[in-house]
Image (cartoon, rainbow, N blue to C red; front, top):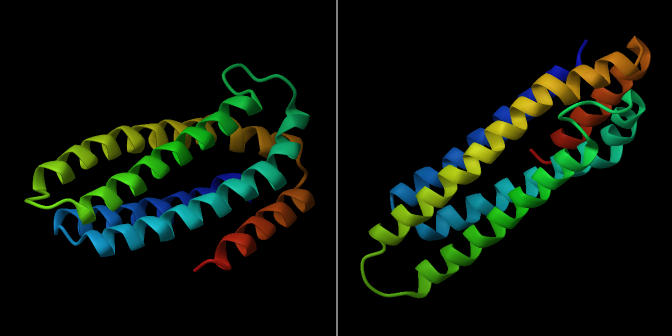
Length: 157
């Protein structure tokens, strides 16, 4: 049992974001906006679990080069800032007249930067955060925390 099992949640989040982007490609802006809201809701819940439940445990590992808690929390905030901009852009696309294709392309370009941030964050969790959690917990605590994380995430599905 390892905290790396929580990466399954990241895969689910990635799939939700791709569904949003597929709707964008079809220029179905209402569906894209709805899927973006679902993605954001689930991402926020996942972040809450990491910050409220796992971060206090992670801090027991002490100083880790390239992995202070502020880095992870800062990345979470930047992700949410991106999502807020995407929502505004989608609202603007829905009310502006004319062909939205080029504006959707610009949005997809911005979303590529967001996905890059998410990939970077995922790698830092995979290589720093989860291994540190594995080191500072025993089998019983690890199992209990992983079960709580999965329970919190499964309530959303």
